[in-house]
Amino acid sequence: MEVQSTNEPIELKPITDKNILLSIKREDALHPIISGNKLRKLKYNLLQAKQQGCKTVLTFGGAYSNHIAATAHAGKIHGFHTVGIIRGEELVDRWKENPTLGQAAKDGMRFKFLSREDYRKKSHKAMHQELERDFGPFYLLPEGGTNELAVKGCEEILAPSDTKFDFICCPVGTGGTLAGIINSANPGQRVLGFPALKGGFLTEDICKFAQKDNWELVNDYHFGGYAKVDVGLVEFMNNFFSETQIPLDPIYTGKMMFGIIDLIKKDFFPSNTKILAIHTGGLQGIKGMNAKLKLKNISLLRI
Ligand SMILES: *Cc1c(COP(=O)(O)O)cnc(C)c1O
Image (cartoon, rainbow, N blue to C red; front, side, top):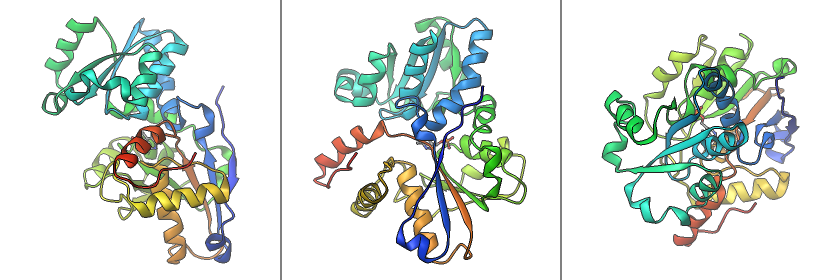
């Protein structure tokens, strides 16, 4: 059965003043750890792994990765062993302090820590052969979990009733989620992707999986790059939370929502436009971000 999350209207003054309808699709509410789009991306991959008789799922990620957290927990629920190949060899004796990796270990994930240089070889055949010697045969999920089956899962995010929206907004990491949204959107709907990182390589990746051209990337709201935040973003997210009771994550959905509201203020959207923003989840990452903010003496994210 396909799971469906609910849409909630966001009634903040800058939005209602402009006669715009903004709703947020609460994919974050699907599961506290296998959050939002990561659940969508895992669904058909885990079915495939089961069909192939694979007992172990191996994947790659950074120390705060939502994908690592989701894979570990889904593995525990669905009876797979899981292995996480983690970027940063300095974490070898410090990973227990990291909330994402701590939870993943509790969920039974085994780790291998690689230097940044070795980590760059993550899609090389020789690397996979070496990992097979270490861990035995495995079902391989790429970093961020994006592949064809992941995109297929993300095509189930939009519901039939979502055709009433003029714009669909979605945060972008690898672009797999955006590709699923593009494929399932109506031709008349415009899809806006908000990259959480700098760099123009995304368009090509998205075109690999997306079959339409009713979309564009809004590159102005990455806040300096992947996992970079500033005081303005933290303040925006905390205000948004006190006014709506909807928590956002600092890496993806916080930046997207900042961008959407900024675009509304700047009259990017015509009056009476209906916008649907996808809350892709990622709330498990707030703890890790707050630990970093504390070191920099920046006020923390409230949850
Ligand atoms: C991983 C992630 C994304 C990015 O998804 P892609 O398919 O890689 O673009 C967006 N939002 C959240 C919360 C995520 O965890």
